[in-house]
Length: 225
Image (cartoon, rainbow, N blue to C red):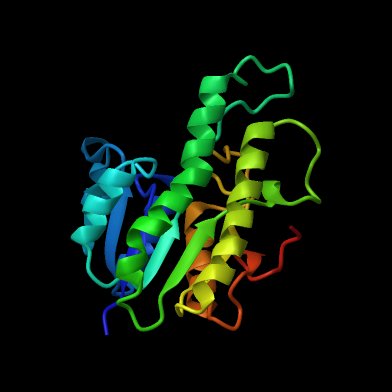
């Protein structure tokens, strides 16, 4: 049976590579971006349907969900990394805090809430929240306050969703994709997007109601909260 996978923030990096690999293995892939006109590489992938919506807009999300049908896997990948410096970084403005927290945290909540009816129609639905090792309490060396805080909150959100949705038969996990050579990760990172995407999809396949609530990396190693 063909599975339907929805990936948010799929226009580049890990999201794009997950869409490519999920489609190549036979999934029906729905890939969301804020601006479809800037997602030509994504749109060219066989088996991928590009959706245009902002994860921070509940009304638009509801419209998209109404046209989706049964959904086997929801991957909440959309995110922003801004204000990388320390406490004196001038980018730490209220506007940037609002933008990043809305996308990285509230965006996960709004997306999950909108697509719950679609997930409920699938036989073994799953939600994967892309987090980061930077969310871990064991990785707090200073700097990047906003991204670290947002990913810690997203991981906490995934843990709570796992509790609330278990009785509905929906498994939820949070995942560190590794340090990946993307626009966000930089050229000095450890792995490429293909290795990360392949590992992540394998972890999503392994996710079940027995393991719901996990926080692990793309290799399956557990992460500290």
